[in-house]
Length: 543
Image (cartoon, rainbow, N blue to C red; front, side, top):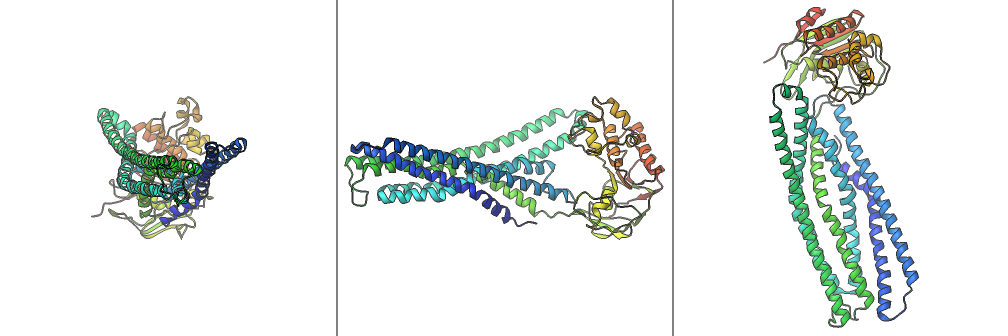
């Protein structure tokens, strides 16, 4: 796996230019405050100020500051988008190359990690990181300028300033725990939603709607309480900061006022406080605390980002078996033979052993056995989607490896047990952009399905196949599997949960494929399909 420290290092380098511009924009206020203090000091002393020159200088510095802020935000936004995009690509590429289901969580947890949770990094990169860079530069420089004019004002800043990070750290411990709990609830709610949507038809049939609604209500209330806990901590940290910053500015204002009135003769380095120095210190004092206030406002962003990084580290540390090949597009290889010899797959909860097997072009094989015995796993091993722990898979007499796995899969057709769709047209869901072969549609018994749809094959489908019945969805899966005229078709329980007529249509389509010279390997419990296969292999459960 990648080094966990690498993302932090990359994000630090990516945000450095934007953070640097943000620091420069804040430092321009020091020059603007100098211009204002000079004009007011001249007015107090009776000297005619250079109003136009001062106004133009102030406006010019303001425009420069605005441009720097604009450029800083653009650079930070670009860096944040690139960082989040890189993480999402990493998640997608890693999961696409994984042979087994991720144990990080359900599909909802993984989707939440790639969407809502990673979005928490955006606020962290846009707000917290530049705020931290400003805290490391701006307050120290203002403190040095303040100490140059008055040691008393510098002591006030030194007394009030460090208290803020101390209280922020104390609040931050609670904020991190609250943010972590909130992220867990987000993942749990997404898992619940994905699970209930998958079983929506069954839940409706058994009348479990009220219970499902109550479950969602409880989960959403839990998430709301966790979210409010994070917000309460955020408001608490802001209140503490405002208290100390207000006291610090007020103390400096009181001291400057009495010093200029002559009531206080101490606090400077021997000479009386000048009007320019007093006004300049008053203008700089709020900006001494402003970077700290910005950091406090973004403190809960850091807590949320830290919780997300823990999730990312947990996901990265997961041991996941890799499928064979790179999953890239490749020309299909010619099929001559398929041999399984001593194949065994070790999962965390069981070890699956498969009988030796030899398949030739034109064969049809039915794999039967009780649920959980490894029928689907055997199809995945044959397709190179899962590596056998022991034994070998020989394709055309050569052990299946990363080198030829992509070309082997390009010669396969895959018909899954559970139909899966893209949120595109039916035409795209079958051919993925390629023209559709009418003979394939006829063989899969999809032609009459198209006639019932409002826009024929241009009808848009949802990810769950909205607008199609269960049997129609299975026919579309068969058409997709046959679309590229594969040498070998792998069908996982193709007639499961179908009515007799629809199941017979699917069987007829599969047999027509075999009659045209195709090679069929299917898992099934259907005796009608088993009876039509050339060979039958039974997998037995092992103690």
